[in-house]
Length: 60
Image (cartoon, rainbow, N blue to C red; front, side, top):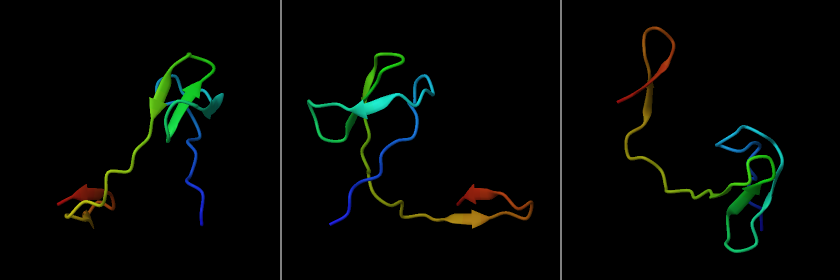
């Protein structure tokens, strides 16, 4: 059984002072901006990424 990855920084303020939010699974709270947020994996896209001529990744 593997653990889920934790976020490295707050998506709102960018600070790294994060701790798990006790009220729901996958939720985190930021001590810097006092916000709570939840991360959720939605699934894989049916279309993939394809490399363009200039070396970047472009969606098909």
